[in-house]
Image 1 (cartoon, rainbow, N blue to C red):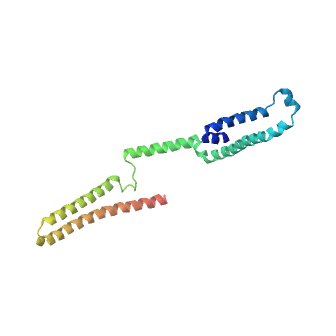
Image 2 (spheres, rainbow, N blue to C red):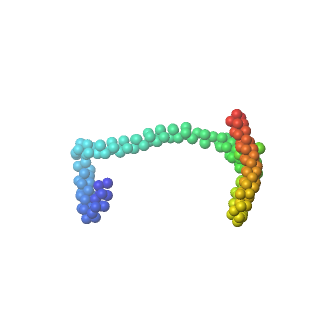
Image 3 (cartoon, rainbow, N blue to C red):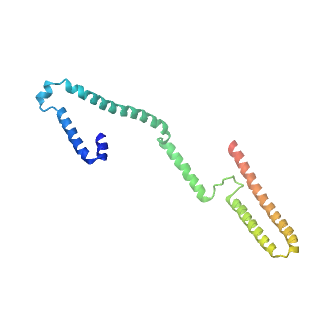
Length: 184
C-alpha cells in the first residue's frame, strides 16, 4: 500500500523506493542453503508473525462462510421445494388466464370494469355539459341569464343524482366484497 501512495505522489521516489524494497527482500532471503540451516532461529521469528496473520486471515472466512451458508437455506427454504414452486406457477398462470379472459373483478361479481367505465363516462359528460351550458349562458342577455342559470342548475343536479346513484351502487358492492373477503 505504501508503494501505491508513493507512486501517486511522485514517480521518481517510487523507483528508488522499489529498489530499496527489493534490496531489503534480498537481505532477508538466505544466500545459500548452508546459511539457512546454520542460523534457523532468527528467520522463524521474523516469518512466524506473517504466517500467523495469513493463517488467521484464511481461517476467518471459512468460519464466517459456514455460518452464512447455514443461515441462507433457512431463509430461502420455501424456494427449494419443487412442489411449492410448481403450485405457485400454476396459480400465477391461472390468474393470468383469468385476467386475459376478463374474469377478474376487483370488487366482486356486482362491480365490473364496464360499470366503472360507465360511471367515468357519465362524469366526463357531466363536466362537458357544465362547460357548454356556462358558455351558452354568457351569450344570453342579462335578463335571461337568471332563468337559464336556474334551468341549467336543475339539469346538472339531475345528472349528478343519477351519477351519484351509480357510484353508490359501486361503493356498496365494493363494501360487500370487502366484508366477504375479510370473513371468508
